[in-house]
Image 1 (tube, helix red, strand yellow):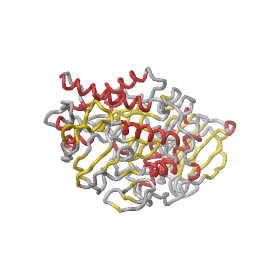
Image 2 (tube, helix red, strand yellow):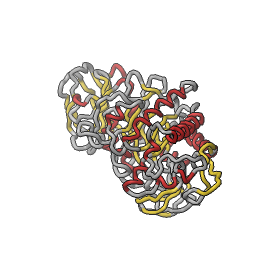
Image 3 (tube, helix red, strand yellow):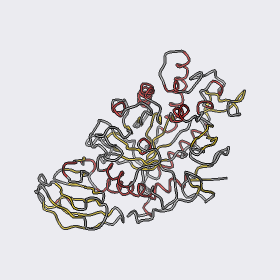
Image 4 (cartoon, helix red, strand yellow):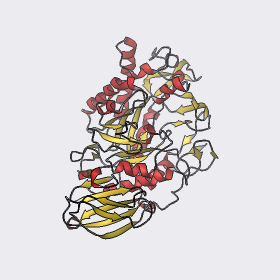
Amino acid sequence: MKRYGGFAIAAACVQLTCIVPLVAAGADSGIDDTAASAVAATGPLRVLESNPRYFTDGSGRAIYLAGSHHWSNFQDNGHRLASTSDPPPVFDYDGYLALLAKHRHNFFRLWRWEMPTWYDAKPPGIKFCQPHPWQRTGPGLAADGKPKFDLTKFDEAYFQRMRARVKQAGDRGIYVSIMLFEGWAIQMSQSQKTDAWRSHPFNGTNNTNGIDADPGGPGSRYFRLEADAMSRRVLALQEAYVRKVVDTVHDLDNVLYEIANEPGDFSLPWQNHFVRFIHDYEVGKAKQHPVGMTFLYRGGTNQMLIDSAADWISPNPGSAEEGYKTNPSSKYVGKVIVNDTDHLWGHQGGDSVWVWRSFTRGLNVLFMEELLPSPTWQDSARVAMGQTRDWSEKIDLAHMTPENALCQTGYVLAKKGHEYLAYQDGSQGEFWMNLAEAPGEFAAQWFNITTGALQAGPKVRGGEQRALFTTPFPGPAALHLKRIEEN
């Protein structure tokens, strides 16, 4: 049986993902590998009143979310693999969690794929996916040659796997966003001919219940609120599935929900419906969890997310003023923002600079992980997410906000007059900080982002409008200032 991801046994290298063990980053990350997240995640999460850019577990501390996610971390599937086997390669979930824990990550998306088989363009080939939420009872065969789905009968093994994986992550201190629906493949049915709708359980040829969410395809009506009788039946079945998911994990502290991955702008009313549906359903539960909405591809705007009913959002690059790819906006928009490379580059971008810039602009981060073996460009982001998470626990993040104008580099978190964490990306080794509103003495620490080493600096006298700092080593750095009487 082939396994891939995490620390699985080597089998073969393919075009985009290698079926080989993942090893540590080439450079010392400054992270203690023996201190991998052993403390269970606490919660449930809720928006932090003192600093609503972040969630909290009710303790009053800010919980900065950072981590890597991968397409196969829930259902085994062949997406982005050369493999066209059925059943698909089995994902090494234990190895995946070990990778996250090693790099001190505490968050990922639990991916869902809705179709059992489809044509994938990159790399080309027929791909398969299992398990699915409903039993395949027949009578009759679906488009993939297997028994049709009965959309009124849940496959308990699917939900048992979901609960087990979310709980296992929580035991390692990792929060999980459960993706309820997946829309990208339906979009690709139109532009890249992935043929995803052909095998979808809600296609009339694939179920025993007389359900056809979008006669003639390509499946976009599945993500819409319509008034006709068939649409009402589809919505009722979708709601039953969502209730089943919530019933499966509602007692776990490390749960978040994501309505759908990248259905188009047409899905906005439908997604808002399900945000409210989950909140209303959880009112009767002992615990309530955050519900998120990620970028509406295609045709969506970040303003749609900002105006939505969601508790947290993941934007696309946006306008030049938003700049979530290269110069992330520090503007508070009324939502917790998770800056996710999946909606910025897909799986082809994001590095240490992007992570540190996002962190010092008040954002949480997610990285689309290909699980390539080290050394690779992906190591930079993996390590930086662990570094920023460590710093988030060291500083008083619950009371620190981005104050771009206080630092020449434009990247600094500050509790004015008390504590500062500034970042320079290696291109500006000498820079000033405005400490005019910061009287008294400050202890200074330099953090070498390349090596992970800490270095004490001389005490700093506050009160200067242009206090000059020179990085004492080559490359990127973070500078931490804290008023001495508060140490």
